[in-house]
Length: 216
Image (cartoon, rainbow, N blue to C red; front, top):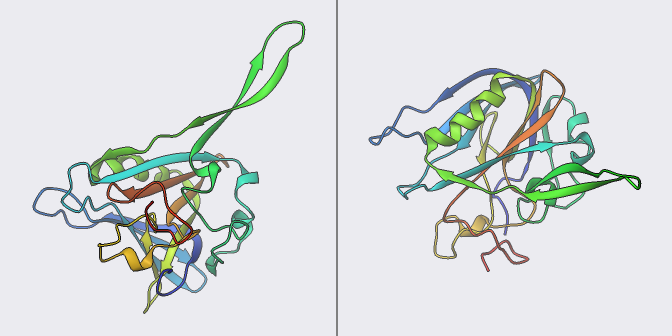
């Protein structure tokens, strides 16, 4: 299956950002980002709702090199549909190693010095919305440009399902939207030109899925 109204990415410049009103527990369902584009302002609802589960939201921030972006950084401002394939620029938190590993250059000193690339897995943090937003919001503050991946609104300019969109339990109301290469995330280019991506999911979503995006 797949998201009901397609999948893609909107690129633009931050016009505004605000949190939802807090719920009864002092937490938030969304961080709301408004992106300025030639077509108008897109409302991007970044979902950090813990869904009444203790430490129910998970997230990680991935540093990215331009070579990892598959041309998404060269797209003009506005909405761009993406095919749910590995080469389109679409995201898959499970299958794209660039979104789950930290990359470093290592060096062996000495007469036969060698430089090699080291890969470390980036673990998911677990917590509540305030903790997740505390990692997202500083990225937005230093951004010169932002890309948001997810599903377009059925009506109006906006993006939702900005979170992992696979691995939902088969008995959940979201299981019909499980699919590959359609995960939602928020990518920023900082003022210094570097790129980082805020990836988010829910603790109820599996980190192992089959070829239909269903939990293994």
